[in-house]
Image (cartoon, rainbow, N blue to C red; front, side, top):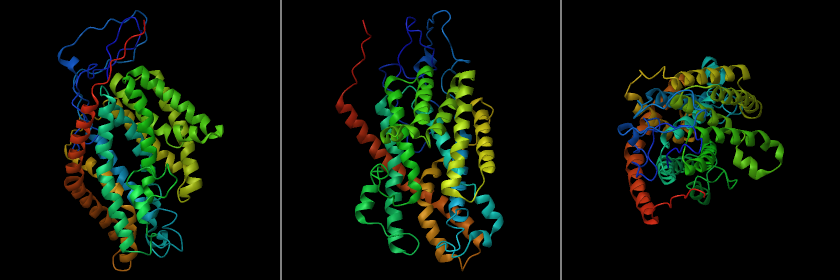
Length: 425
């Protein structure tokens, strides 16, 4: 929700958004990825001068009036990240390079060494996902009510995920030998998306990232409930970042769960980049972004030493740094002229492709590796996965999301309007 600025509060001016108490247009339709343009503001057509106390701090630049152009390039970045992760899983993991690998039956570096050296760094795509998520979540829920934020997350996450869980469970059950057959009880619990919170395994190993996403949504919902402003989002970045810094040494599992020290700084980077995009750059945002980069370089090294093993810290940091610099260009408007509308469809494929590519793809590699050239097999699996993702998006994700949106909106209407907060006397 959005509240009008009163001169007595000293609140920093915000960009255009839905007015307080106004009925917003609701979450973006499922066929429009999150990186779309910001919602149009009533203030764009009926501007009102807002008094600001003399000397009150202000962001470096004013918020743009009205509807911002769609950031098509972000959709393309998401697809590139998803393809990089798939390439890594097929031809760049420590498991795929093991002499006892049940994916290729021999080290993949001996089959296609050049592809392996490139694919070994594809896991950085996950960190790229997190940064983009922080950026587009802040964009998509600016000026919206908490109920709109909740509905938009449900219709975005669950339809394709439910299909992914059931599809993967069927494939793994019918074609054993690479991955263990999941128990029906585990499959059903996975449909909740809370299996990591219950310390249960996921039907597909790549679903671990969704647990970080869910925790970010739940924590950020606190800020959405108060109404997003420049100051509140900056304060959130500082507080959540501080908790992420102290959580590992605290000895409190609940604090670690809440702060998510492994992923928080990537989401914070995305939030800072969006504030830079909406309000313009300033020293505070540059400081948050620089600190997030320092925390990220350490997390990248930790992940290499504990999980990946096949790539180097310098290479991973270079890839992540180049991506972050590109996102700075996006935030400063340097890519606004890239209005390739086909990227909308490309971005829509990202999530369903990510959900179905790993277990099913590695099983097919195991069955077809002796019949098809390895490079052709990997490339063909990625292409087939994208085509399958398009079918999932059109035939399952979009229809089911419309049904969920309609019924969840009706349910919230029955709850009645949220009571207005009365100012303190």
